Image 1 (cartoon, rainbow, N blue to C red):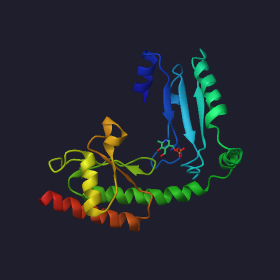
Image 2: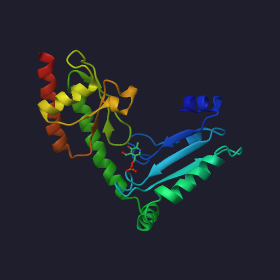
Image 3: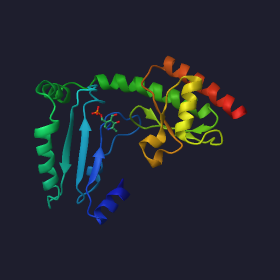
Image 4: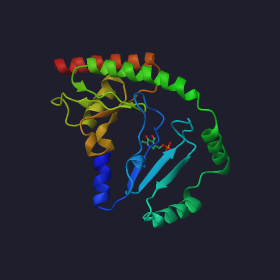
Length: 213
Ligand SMILES: Cc1ncc(COP(=O)(O)O)c(C=O)c1O
């Protein structure tokens, strides 16, 4: 993050930081780039769909960490206009946002405990499946394994479609998120362990079969 900030400073660019999963961490706490710089402007984006379970309510917010030169003045003005004219959420939704942001947060602890159990489960299963490797996610509810066995498919997209047709498990192809996602796929581990287990059993069978071919 510090390297990104340095680069932004060198080229006089603001950093845009999407922090929608800020309170959904497993090990350690979330750190915002805004806390690591004194001179690079940072536009922080956040929303209520994840931590506050308000998916679909279209509630989000920006805030600006803008050092003394006020480099973001024009951006702020333009965004404020856009908010007023086009993308402002409804009044009831805004009141719901206030209730969410100022209300108790104790539900989150229980939720994160459940998610951690699911994260640990899916991570363990994936490390036992041949042909893929994975990092352990430190936050949110996605895992992004890499396809190590590449001789059977032309791309991550073809791989994902093969898994879908054969094992009836749906993953998202990594290249859909940009070039850095090539030969990766994304799994959402929100479902309970029993469902993840079924999906991983099918996926493991699929991989073992393909590797033996
Ligand atoms: C990283 C990230 N940012 C922002 C969003 C936007 O959420 P919403 O459109 O529900 O506010 C998502 C949703 O999946 C996300 O994963």
